[in-house]
Amino acid sequence: GQQLNQSPQSMFIQEGEDVSMNCTSSSIFNTWLWYKQDPGEGPVLLIALYKAGELTSNGRLTAQFGITRKDSFLNISASIPSDVGIYFCAGPQIQGAQKLVFGQGTRLTINP
Amino acid sequence: DGGITQSPKYLFRKEGQNVTLSCEQNLNHDAMYWYRQDPGQGLRLIYYSQIVNDFQKGDIAEGYSVSREKKESFPLTVTSAQKNPTAFYLCASSILGPGGEAFFGQGTRLTVV
Image (cartoon, rainbow over all chains, first blue to last red; front, side, top):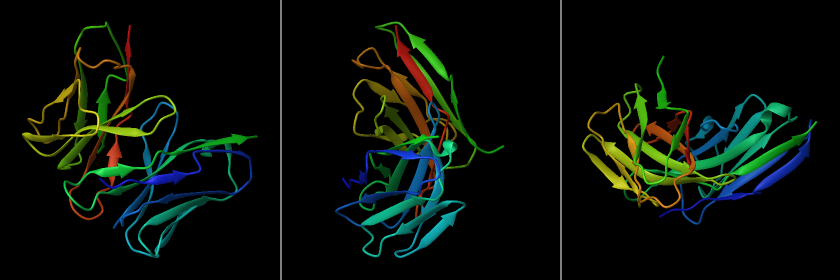
């Protein structure tokens, strides 16, 4: 099946810094989803992207659907302590039964 | 409020016992999913269902069973055949078709004692 590769696997930053993470695949996706998971909780959908080249913002978060449809990135500006968590990219598999494919996640740690 | 509810939040099981995790959604979603998450790891798909009375194995189905008798409900049974059942279990649901954003429950942390 399709696979998603997320990088970096972990990030250690200072409060106030900007963050950038990305997700790549060897095959195309028609939708890119970005989730955040707080410790001990279920993932929450942050941003959904539906069209190649689309750039979407949600507060301090900005995500883009790559032109090739094989990648996406998520930026967080001016990080704050509550941004700590695991960020996952995901996309509905195109061929076969519809199920979501997830990246391995990027763990964000912020030093105050 | 519309949403997806998992219960219980924490569950303890003796080795060798079966245990069932509950997942209910009132979002009228056709598809439902069960994922397993180990500490510091990503999400691994156990089972999924796209329609009532039908479900498919995911990547790590061994030692687990599910049923989908109602659209709203997708319980997961962790059987004694699961060798390492201690983990965080997440249930999700989504629409079928373009988009397909999944919405997750709060998770159940299962510990085998």
